Image (cartoon, rainbow, N blue to C red; front, side, top):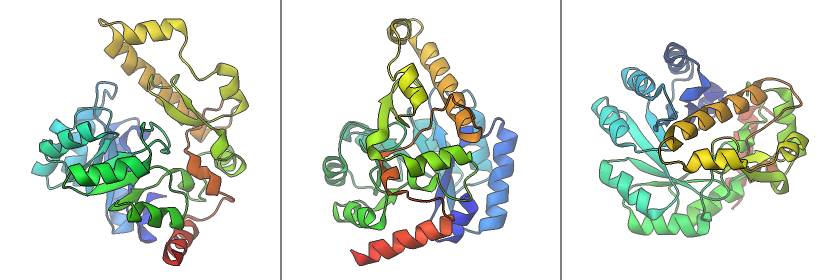
Length: 291
């Protein structure tokens, strides 16, 4: 999927946690480099919930990926190591305070995660967040969330964004390795079917409101909330919750089961069919040109 996206004229990034071992991650990086001939990056979770973080960072630097996108933690170590290897670092942010912090640490760009984003969404709309970050920061601002077609890409650019990060609309591509049920869910459901749940990672995360999600609920139970706030154990509980949640998402994404928890953003409203990724990008370009 990443290779086809690059060949179609965009860059792409893949989550390091998609791979069980760092050897698998290294192998995939080398395969994409050999097959695509274009720039791509790795999404790296940089807090204690990612037990493979340091090894993954080392692989990214050794293999010299074009960029790393950091999330859920301080990017300071990542920036230092990546820059020493000639790798750029883009940092997920949801507010000005953190954006200015990562800029001071040397980030090359900011990923402005707004409240329309799939996955871990921010609290602000892009109409508030992007202009604010452009005013307060001097590095490029890439808007993430609320983009499902070319018209919305243009709208983001007109609000000051230097680029757009998109994900949900590509889940239902032919090249995507997720299950057919997951792809079809992105076709069948729309923006009004996206809900926030804290059961996966402890942090609000957007998922499709399937019958199973309705059954299990979207809020942590009393014990989970207690453990999440306990000063002595909360960091370990959060790490355990996050890893357990990510494994649940991965299992649902790649297999067919009635216990489905599928992550997606409101932009699936624009997904009407399962198509080749090249066709999706071709339409995005056409719509952008139409204004």
